[in-house]
Length: 424
Image (cartoon, rainbow, N blue to C red; front, side, top):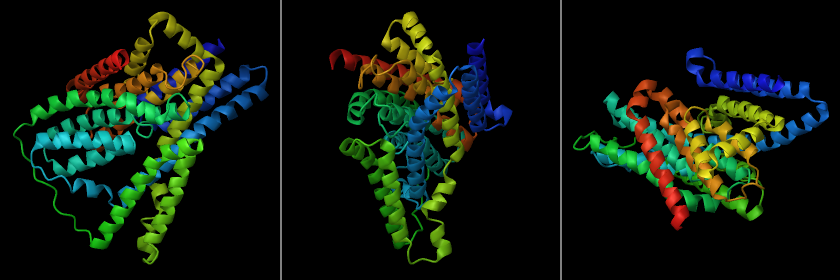
C-alpha cells in the first residue's frame, strides 16, 4: 500500500513537470512538492525516524554538491554574457552561405556545450541564429540542430551535461576517460543530422553580422572575462584531479577568482555602471527555479532509492533485458519523455559501484544515451525546453521535422560506441 502510494505521488509529480506549460505551473514547484511528499511518506511508514533523517542528510550532501557546482557554472557563464564575451566568437563568422553557417553553428554549439553546459550554449547559439536569420522556418531548423548539437556536445564532457557531471561527481566516471571514450560517438550523433539539414540550405544566402560598436576598452574587458571564464571552467576538472576534492570546490574557487577579476576591471567606474557587471548582479540573473527543480527531483529520486524501489527496478530491468547496452538504450530513449537528471540519479541508485566499477563501459554508455536521447522530443532536455521557449517552437513541428534526425544520430552514436568497444 505504502509502495503504491509513493509511486503514485512520484508519477503525478512527473506528469505535472511534463505538462508544466498547459498547467501553467513552474516545474520547480511540482518537483519540490514531489520531493518533500516522497520523503514524508517514507518517514511516516518507517520504524526509525532517526535513521530516515540520517539517510536524508546523506543524500542532501550529494545533491548539494551538484547544486553548488551548477550555481557556480551558471554564474560564470552569465558574467561572460553580461560582458558580451560571446560576441567575440560571433564576430568571427564571415560566411554568407546558410549551409556553411549551419555547420559552423553546429560545430560551435558542440564544442561550446562541452566546455560550458548544453543549456547555456543552446540559449547563446539560438540568440545568435535569431540575429542572423530572418525566415522563421529557417530559424526553427537551425534551432532543432542546436538542440541536437548541444546535447551531443554535453554528453562527452564532465562539464557539458548535468547527467555526465552527476556521474563524474558520483565517482562512476573519470574526466579524461569519458572524454576519450565518448568524443567520437558524440560527434557522430551530431554529424549525421547536420549533414542532412545542411543539404536543405544549399545555395541560400544571408546577411552577415555588422561590426560591433563597442569601444576598444569594452572589447578588452570582454576578452579578459571570456578567456578567464573559459579558462577557469576548464581548470575545474584539473583541480579535482590534483586535489581529489569534489568538483564543486573547484567551481567555487573559479567563481571567487572571477569575482576578484570583475572587481578589479570595474574598480574606477561609476558605481551605477559597475554594478551591472558584478557577480552579485549575475547571481540575480541565474535561473534559480532550474536549481530548485533539480533539488526537488533529486530529493524525490533519493527517497525512492532509500525506499528500495530503484533496486527493484534494476533487478527487473536486468532480468527482462539481460544486456547492459539494451538497458542503457532503454534509459536513453526514456530520457526523451522523462527528464534525464532523475533517470541518471535513479541509475546511480540502481547500480552501485560494486556492480559496475568506475569507468565501466555501462556508465560511459549511460552518459551517451541519456545525454543524447533527450533530443528526440523537444521537452526531453533542458536545452530543448529553453530553445522552445525562446523561439516558440511548436511541439508537433519538432516531432515531425527534427525527431527522426535526432533518433538517426542517436542510433549512429550507439553503433560507433559498440564498434569502439569491440575493436578498441
